[in-house]
Image 1 (cartoon, rainbow, N blue to C red):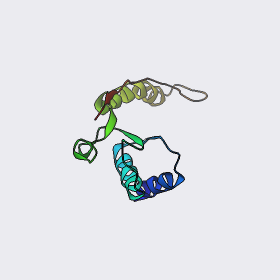
Image 2 (image 1 turned 90 degrees about the vertical axis):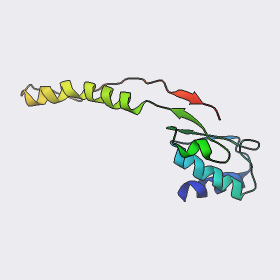
Image 3 (image 1 turned 180 degrees about the vertical axis):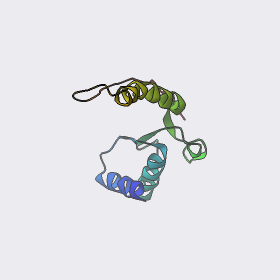
Length: 111
């Protein structure tokens, strides 16, 4: 419902051209809010989500999204975290913060 309210707010503003939501469920709510204001997606406003939720395929209109391999993300996160855990378990001193990063490339699913 909050995403729908955001869609309404954006629709009333009148100058929004595109929305990229943090996940598909939010994107679907934004679409509903934009529709409440008489705006059509994708004719009036472009909307895309992130995570390729199954409902995005059957949503009206179907939802453009970024598909991410969450299993690979989880495996990489574990692989990065394990040496940090081992360091603590083995009593080795560590000063400061641990930092790690990895970039994953998702697939753009245009619908």
